[in-house]
Length: 102
Ligand SMILES: [Zn+2]
Image (tube, rainbow, N blue to C red):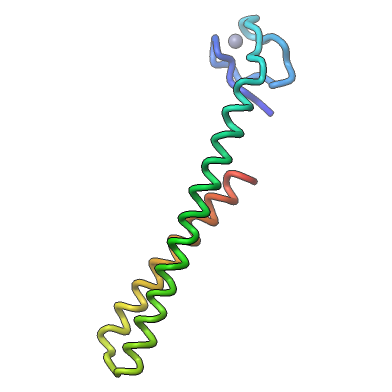
C-alpha cells in the first residue's frame, strides 16, 4: 500500500522506513490506526442509512398498497416516488460500503 510522505507528499510504500525522496522517517502506524477508526465509523453511518432507506421503501410500498386499494392513482405515483427514493438511499449506502471495503 502506498502512503503519502508527511514531509514532501511523495507516494512511498508503507513498508519503507524512510522516504526515498526526502529521507524523512515514515510515520509509526498512526496513519493506519486513524484510517481504521474512520472506516468503522463510516460503516456505522452506512447501517443507519440502510435502516432509513428500508423504512422509506416500506412507507412507499404501504402508500402504493393503500392507494391501489382506494383506487387513488395519483397517490400511487407518490408511493412509487417514495419507494424509489428509499431504494436509492439503500443502494447509495451499499455502493459506499463496497467502495470502502473494496
Ligand atoms: Zn518525503
